[in-house]
Amino acid sequence: MDTLELLRTFREVARRNSFAAAARALDLAPATVSKYVAELETRFHLRLFNRSTRHVSLTDAGQLLIEHSGLVVDLIDRAEDAMSDRAARPGGRLNLSAPHVLVQTALMRRLADFMLLHPDISINLWLTNQVADLAEDAIDLAFHVGPVAENSQIVRRLLRLEMVVAATPDYWREHGRPEHPRELVTHRTLAVAPPGETPHWHFSVGGKIVDLPLRAICTASDSSPMVPLALKGAGVIRGSRMLLGDWIALGRLEPLFGEYSPRNLWLHAAYAQRHHHSAALRALLDFLEVQMRRPAPGGAASGSANLSA
Image 1 (cartoon, rainbow, N blue to C red):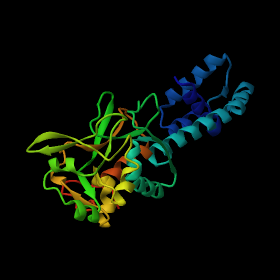
Image 2: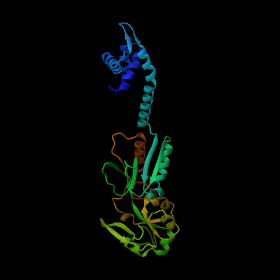
Image 3: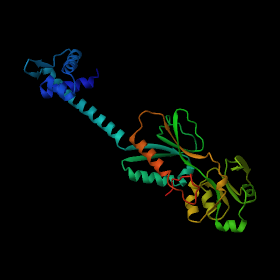
Image 4: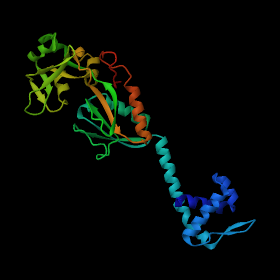
């Protein structure tokens, strides 16, 4: 039997000066209470109670055990209460990971809303374009754009991403609006690509993926500089409505070719396969489930929910 349970039983008998009363308080059979106390006495090779047919009192050894066990039992009880509270009430720290591009989206505002809703939760956000190892990196929840291997983790679809090309109204007036994605090769495109590689945009045309190599006027390894460049009228950008929705809603950018967006591009959330997740993680997942059902700004197609305000 667990030592802690033995000590709790022993202390209840001492407090009530009765094996029967302790059994009722602990919802145990009297024989079980006697057995637990006897097991303690066997472990310590000492008698802990003076027993008579009418009275139970502590021996000197029992009094010594009362004095020394109180702090231990109290600490364990407080720890168990804290763990139960943490499991039931959202609080503590959540370790999240996300690709850099998501910092520029409404996801950050939604995380702020979540933190205001749950002030006892703090967030540690690790920005990385690499796939995080949930166990090794101690990540509670990892956001991913695109496909995610489901080995040893649970992957939840949060949002289908509709990809559009966009430019300022002045740019389209000056350079003309293309009628088909293939015509973008003649436009001033702003694209993301690894250093030294030709940038490509992919479109779904007639149910098939069409690869469009670009002669971009600006390439970068990250999308961070592309939105400011597009807003200044420097060229055409491609991104999700999650990224560009605010600027589209304000009329700063005008989107094209949402109908050619790949159908299988999703924002995912991945978390470890555990039987017991914290209340904080459950609260975040539930919050995101609600947010993803809200309509998207900038005229997104139905069925393409958004996390934007």
